[in-house]
Amino acid sequence: MSQFDDIIKNELTFVRNYVRDLPFSLVIAFADSFNGNEDQIREKQRKIFDMYRLSLDKSILNLRIAIEREVKLIVKADGISIKQDGTIMLRTRGDTVLIGSIDQFGDNATEIENNIREWLLVTVTTGDQRLKFDNARIIDVEPLQGYRDVSNARRILNEYAIKPIDALLLGFGIKPCFETYRLYFARFASQFFYNGKPIHVIQLTNTDSGKSYFAVRMEFVDNWTHFTEFPSPAKLIFDGRTGIHGAVFTSRGIAIDEFDKLRKERFLDAYQSLNTGLENGIWRRGVQTISGISLEGYRYIPFLIFGNIIHGETPLSDIFTENSRTYLTNYLTNQIGINAESFVERFALIDIVLRKIPISKYLIRNDKGIIGVLKDSIIRGLISEIENKIKIRYLDTGEIEGRLQRHVEAIYHIYNALFDMEPEDTNFLIRSVTGELDIGNLFVTPAKEIDKIGEVISN
Image (tube, rainbow, N blue to C red; front, side, top):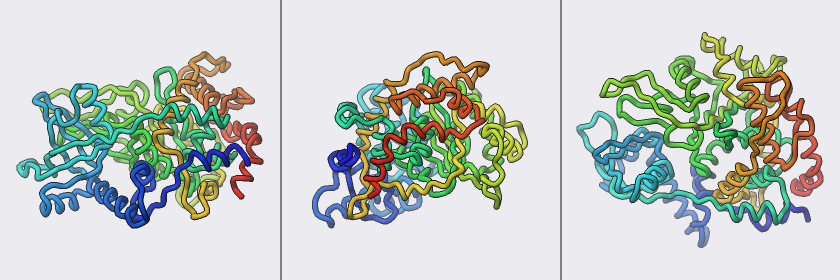
């Protein structure tokens, strides 16, 4: 029996999803509460889904408030505003503003600030009908903040003597092998900071590579915000209509899907703000507040942008023959009508995965077909442990300088921390980060160590 078989047997959690449309990531987040027989588990999942969907659909929320007067919902705010009189406003995904008081969220400033950026169980009632936007009044708040189980994360790494990237893959229910290294290294890299700055990543793949699953799971694992299309500046930075700060101020990371279906006007509207925010952590919105001062906020936050490698009706693999950074710069420049080089330069990795890798082939399932994963708290602990392994050290990259120098250093040391080994060919890593080569070849050597184990898991 392999070391991975032991982890799968002893550490992974297998929970069946009984409710249609209930995100699997939400099932995992509440896995500890699902005890009892099948009917009891089904009912608990139904109640959780009911509370979750109220934060996504303002019409259903309004209906429930109209009938029941008081309702509970599970919500992660995608925007916040706090006034000096103690009023706090949280914007839900369904675009309802929940209005309450700061003393409902904690006993001190630090506790309040932490809680408003986490998942919450909120009880609400009828809002102020005089306001020009949908709203509800907060009656009660229960933080659902998850802890970081560093001790169990450290125990798993040591007891099973596995690479940190293998532990993360197993945590997501994925079999470690060359193909999954190829898909997930870039995604995992976006979870870390290097020398105080976030690692931004763009990854383009074929369909069925698990991009959306990863993004949604990170919402619950580590308080990311996942947009299914490129967000408006109001959702991302600041909404002048309500005075609410957007997702960059309420999240630990931003994941954006469907980049290949980019809407030109929306991207142009956010372009300059993105360039400044991605590089310097300064988020400016080109609108005026009530006091006449343009909005500005400061926060470093990683961006992970996903897209499919389709160019019109032609697969990208049929036309892509150049440097990945050059390709994406030219593609975006043609799409939006202005030079996109400065935007692309902000990203540490432009990862274009030409090979089709269906993630369903690599899922870890038990004999009942249920996917096994590590608890969210342990994945949070793993992320913390790996962050502590990342060295901050100058790397001689030859003639590379500026942002690319920083990107190469960051990816080099993150690779080292994830695989517990240095890249076999530093020059290859450099050329991969600069866009000249496919980064996949960096994973051949570590994958050889688990080829045999991978076969055991597959069987």
